[in-house]
Length: 157
Length: 124
Image 1 (cartoon, each protein chain N blue to C red):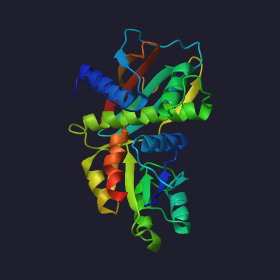
Image 2: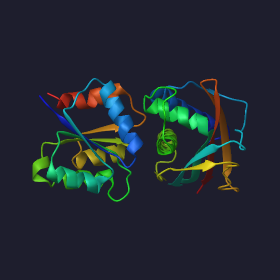
Image 3: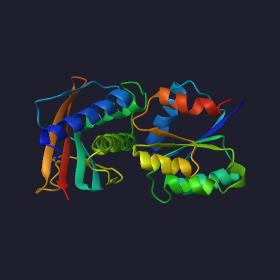
Image 4: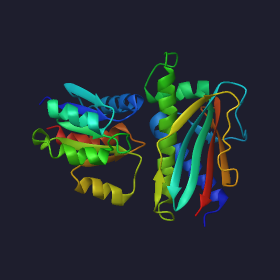
């Protein structure tokens, strides 16, 4: 069995790999456990099933999503980026972070199937999926400018 | 020698990201095509084959694994090099995809160096 502390490390390492390789943003653990839900924000979610089931989500502000999209598309910092591009980019972040988590869990859980990511935008967003599941929250600071929170909700079968 | 490339991914944004990364790798193509899923890719390949295909695996309508099998049935795609691009990193899956006719496999997150390493041997 993996301890929650270890899941925390796995999620953080997976997020670091993705952000440092493809998004070119510095990522550090943060003490701030949530983002401002009254502002326009985003929630990228991807579910998984198999030896372990649950979902992984990334919660972030709209401006943070815009910066991620611009960096992934190699656009100037003030360039216009469409809503679709921002949602696609955040969905792809969720997809890649979950892929990296899956890879890191492969030795313990060899059978994990991952869904296609979904992204929603709005205010007062929070994930209540799996209230009875184990929950790991990993708040991070991106480029010393934005806060984002990775959530891993899981239940062993 | 002029080369042509097709990028197959259900996300238009990811297709742009892959194209940007291919350019950053220093590789140049005289013609590039895009497709949003395996079925669209097969139709485009029937009409006009390309030298190299970069293809996602998890896509609606027709996943990349099925696209590889169908592309290998096309007479004009026997020499097309197909490289899969996916977050899936299980060795069993990679072996299975390579056995079904893919020529290479790039895992996400990727770097320009990974594209250079996988594609350069097919550029000469």
